[in-house]
Image (tube, rainbow, N blue to C red; front, side, top):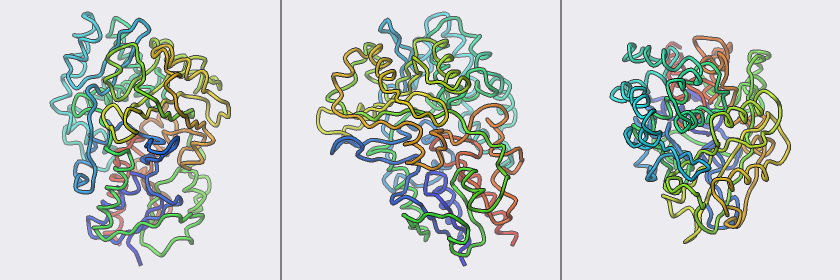
Length: 469
């Protein structure tokens, strides 16, 4: 009998398996698709030689993850590549606000009235960032806070809506960039704890940047799987699990799946009936004949580029997708251009690029024209660079990754109490009412992103249970 079986070979499932194997437990991973990776994959989606990341591409939470930093993933091929600027947010007049590694450079891009307020916002937390990240990403009850005072101060700043936090700024560059940071988790700007979301992304950039993985996000998954195999664990692909009886006997079963799928497979009935899924995304992967022709010079040097004319436009787009049930006319876009720093992603002189905008949950329309009109506002002539495109709306995104129900790449709405208490109101979110069944996906704290911390935290709950039996 195995000690643990993990269902799902995404970053969280693989991290959970590694953490258990490191502690001497026998572990096997079962993945429904024919390759591992979940939200961290790399595929030739458009043309031969163009290597795209179907989901995550830039990894501020990955490089800052306490779980990943504790593992020897570099020995298994993971190499972080840093663009000159982690992120840029261009404006219609050709200028841009930037999120640089340097706090001073970032603050200067906001203008003289907001440079001081921004520095006063982030500088108190930066010297304690590693401890704060560990405390923030380990909650709840998986570890006692190492610095409860700093964590409490962070909560006072971050738990209110982001619109409260941005009142300290006077001008649009700072307000708009920060609104865009919040929108990375598809949360309305007025939501609970959205200030913390934006602040975490900013601090992560200043601490260690927003890198891409050399060769693609698949490198993260492959490194985790390589380490797991050296620890004695096994990975089985092309193995769909429909019920617990499909799996070999084990002392514990750990699911890197949606709560909906877990309840169906494990016979948990209505345990997660109240769990809410959020808006979906419409994503396009591009093969380009050259770099994106951004008007703002800073955007040409950035790995990630946010697109939204101002904070009001971003807020309108988020409301349309999350509350009004319609696709926005001017969608807020998150774009990543990995080949500005990783030249092996595309043939010589060519580039890969992706962009996505928020749409209602399960939306079946086509956002291509609206998305490309947005890009043309800030990169005139963009369409002329397109060699090929691969589009994916919510149905296609859910088909690629079953955890993304209705195209929700956050694996659950990041709003209300579900922002911090997910997948149900419980101090023990990784356990279920079945004593041998656990959940470790992004539907558990600390939530979405390629960081492995949900898997790390769940593994703690599992090994504590195993040591009691």
